[in-house]
Length: 160
Length: 259
Image (tube, rainbow over all chains, first blue to last red; front, side):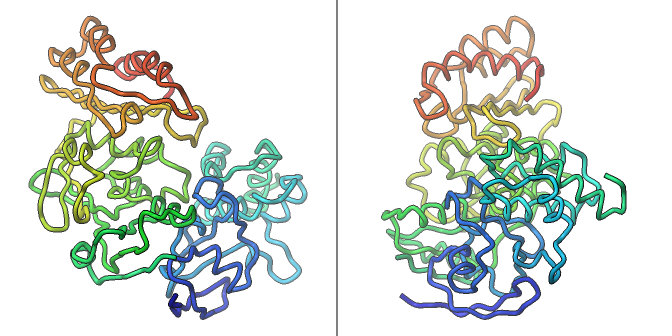
């Protein structure tokens, strides 16, 4: 089984790894690049737990062929916080009890980040649409939607 | 384990396809099969340069096979397909799933193919060969080569209707989907997930050929399951699908109710 060398930006760090032929990106990120923040859930593109941003756009890393990200930029939850300072979304998720078991959380955060990057002032319906590909079996979604709206408000300097 | 061979162009990739190999488009079908240990192929073929453009063509609008659902949503020429693209997956899936791949999506997926069937699209292979989508879909398990593009004839946007029936909103797979092109004299009505592949409801089309009015709608609904072969799956039984298909077709024809 041959390995292929690829290099890409992972959360501001340039890295080079050898990826297995046919390997999905999630496996290479977790086992090879050492970033355990994307979660492996359904492995069939249904649950959204493995959501990462490829060149700023949400993709499901479980059904992305790893070698196709050569030369691209990947953002994961691992790069959201700046040192000890959590990203506004992470903060809002904690404050709003938007994570219970936490398995969906990193996918939710990346889907939400992609939304806020493109649309800093989304409506509630736009938030619901943005996380519609991410399953959560704990919260009933309402605290997650509230947290994303709260983070958007904070990033805009508005009162929640 | 799976080998991956990348060719410069889609045409070269098509030439390299053989028994036991699959062409990788957006990954939503093929990588899922890889993850689940599908033994029917051991080689992935892909192309570095793919056709991801939307543009005018003599026969209508040409949509490159690698055009994603998100690309469709940002194409002003394809406004009539926006509700279809929006109904597919969540945002991440829409950034990956392609028009070409959707032609091969098995039930309960493949809603875009249903719309393209109602629109009488032509499927153009990378070899240049072209065929109507209806015969392409009927024989898709034996398709040779790689789809390069689909060509959608110009359509009166007000005549085109689409509705996806799913149990979960905003994202859920189809109990069934229905697309209709209600052009005068030669209408098209297509159902998804009501047969092994997207299928035209010829009985309904015959009834609507005289125009869309109360009596033709009644006749179309009564005849709409003619030729369909709904199946049982985890979402609904075949019996249920056949019972509610006329109800959903009627709502589509009357343009009523939430989609």
